[in-house]
Length: 150
Image 1 (cartoon, rainbow, N blue to C red):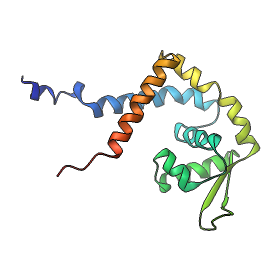
Image 2 (cartoon, rainbow, N blue to C red; image 1 turned 90 degrees about the vertical axis):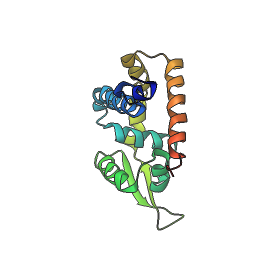
Image 3 (cartoon, rainbow, N blue to C red; image 1 turned 60 degrees about the vertical axis):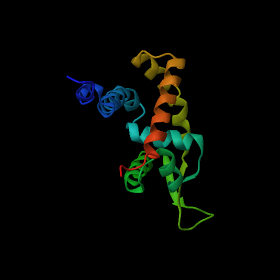
């Protein structure tokens, strides 16, 4: 087999490694987030809101790299759980804003143990988790700015 042929081995595919790693890590989060009554995508929305609230739906969509059509059902479910409210933005009537309820604010205190729990479950220390995160963010940036083949 040539080096070029080896490039097509499944074990050498970046997309395969990322796909399996993503599914595996999200599965590891599932029981931890279940204690908060959150799915992984809902947890990401809450993280964005804990950083800044209220926040326009468009801003959350941009921060999470999610389409509005994907985000809307997540927000409806979080509203049904009593963690967020949705309302028209005071500064722009066309925009929908999302804010935390007192229960949503309170949930943050319960979520403080999630990162440490996940590092322990994945066998990572804080430095290795930060290094891995930096690598992923670099890869995301490269992928979102990649040119289509000509």
